[in-house]
Length: 377
Image 1 (cartoon, rainbow, N blue to C red):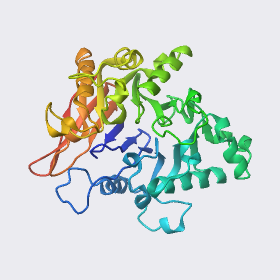
Image 2 (image 1 turned 90 degrees about the horizontal axis):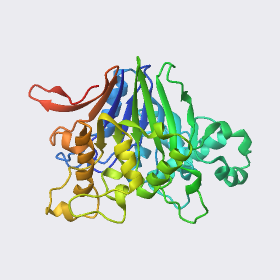
Image 3 (image 1 turned 90 degrees about the vertical axis):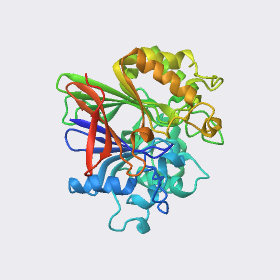
Image 4 (image 1 turned 30 degrees about the horizontal axis):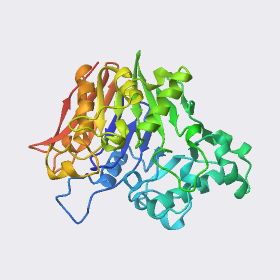
């Protein structure tokens, strides 16, 4: 059985994927808890991840994917992981990354600092060394980088996966892990010449398909892309006959329930009306009893101070997503709404021969974890 673990981190991301063959994939890492505030509702992310690894006697993830380098996807990664590029970040207790996966912008972008800069330097180091990395990009985009660093692009093509392709090693549902990963973004049409990289638009968007017995469960990870990027993903998928690669039983919705991922131009008063392409993705791509998950703060009530905040989550977007799941007898779940304030817990999706089931790990008297199964089939 495979599981997806979504950590409560306010408007930030870290998802752990556990495959049935024991491999572990981490999608983003943003430790947002304030260690000086015992009432902080965010989970102690490094402690939670270390506890999980200790339980299986390991100190590494098989793959760590940073979908892009914004703070809400990378915060304090420099303090948690073992970095081959930096001898000062290799002490005992740091968690190793057997493979680092990044979009091309994580190699090419300039002007970074903090955790983003550390990850960029690690990605550059591994790519130049030719091992322990996968880059999602149109290969030609990396030509200048290779020339500047004295390496041949042709010698690194095995480390590069373009949009519209399956990731090598995750291209056979009948293999031990039972997982296919299909890349939707970054796309070639996004990769024009510009001085400033638009990280959210260059973010990695992918569909993961899990096979358990005779059942395939599709999970869509949309990172922080906006409605324009989603629209181009839909249009390109249709043009190439890849509509099935946009079907979903589980949808990790984009950008912490921001209306801008539905319709940048119009939030709406009580509900965001999506663009036609995004509507198609959400409604026509949905499987019966599908699960939408927002990695975000609690959805604000109408007229509250948080409702006036320009930052997500936006109740208007949530209202649309709720309509989508109502129509398919599904669920709309929010990480911070399913996590106890005094004892933060992650949410999980279990993937079995019966399909996907949402499980909220809620603390109850006696320090037991109560699993609330929300959907199966």
